[in-house]
Length: 269
Image (cartoon, helix red, strand yellow):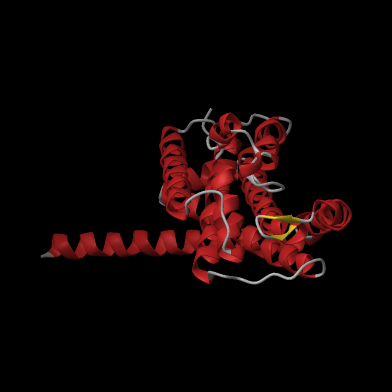
């Protein structure tokens, strides 16, 4: 009887520790995003405004319709998704790497907090920034085109799943990065090409059969098309297939991150 009481007390104590730790990480991440809004919120708004002016208003007026909708309307979901991907990734990779650099991450890892609590905390910060930026970019898009949400559940779930997936990808990048130069390698040489080739500015139906097959190896293609389907009701990819790829990518990255952190890879010297 006494052993059970002691065991329950220990469990309750660990639960409280993890809840406090989770709340603390989220609170810090949200305050960080809001405090430096000139770096976290304003640049995506300016960048997407330029995209809409150049590709939407200037080039789009000559292209006409794509997939049955005006070109500016067609690219709007892709541009919103691109901002979600880059900002979710960037938020976690910079925050987690800063924790490594200043060595307060090691303190969290040796504390009673679970590894999953730490991961959820950082990912929640990336999710917050991804959602916040998506709202800002959507407001910008409304100045250039009319947008409506055809399937709200698909739209919202795609935002969440994509933001979480790339928050985990950013965390993975931060685990292996040894300096600030290395945290920019993946965004520059991997993330940017995959994003631009992920159907943001075009429908893959315009490609030859061979390149359509190649394009389907790009996971961002499924995220962009799922989000476009949620907003406009059009997609180059079956929605069920898109969800399957996104969820598989999320589960794989989450499992890999947990495995690496438990081993101390990139964290403990």
